[in-house]
Image (tube, rainbow, N blue to C red):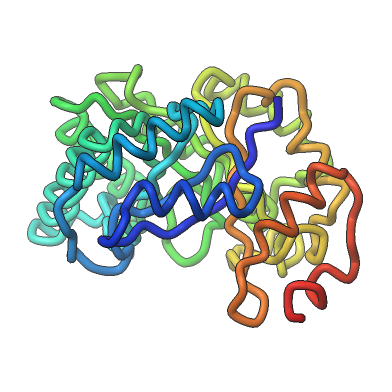
Length: 290
């Protein structure tokens, strides 16, 4: 069964229940959300009533809650070894893990971080040190996201991801989230996705792959820029993305859309329908706008 969804909101008024209802309005059977604003530390308390209501509806709709994903805030950067900034990132990530545990969430996607000029090896060692501290008392699995390689980002190739995983003590609590736009921009030709999976399996192991962010890219292969595009409207193209989404080796892996809004309107209902039909609609953006 295709497990497909998108990024959705999470607000104080209805929390997980609102996130679920938004996902259902798109025709999705999974979703991803932040537990608060990704660019700041403002967080309201988790209200169990909304969580329980959402869980009951998901049970009725036969939605696998274990495939629902939380994304860690952007302001967490474990790669930066500055004492104050590193301590902040570890502390905030621990708080996010606790919120996930309160929500019953199994997986949280994390950008590995940027070494800010301190060097890749130093940055990777910082990430390992931070994650080992965070995961020491955690029941949430952290998924390292593959990155485009912009600036001093770590995670631009599978070798860097492998280095991080090799240093994690609790390997049952670490995994990977592939992002198709990031892979393209990092230099991986996703039109040959089975070859990419073979490389990943050899270097890391397919058992670690727990989530796919499905995005087209505004940029050519290897641009290292990270600019998402709507499905079929970018350099990757519809057919290559469909081949990834329906790859039998990824059948049980949730696919999450993070494509840009069109004229301030969410495209996800239209994109999910297009994906289910396996037919590209060149007029999709016009339909969303109208």
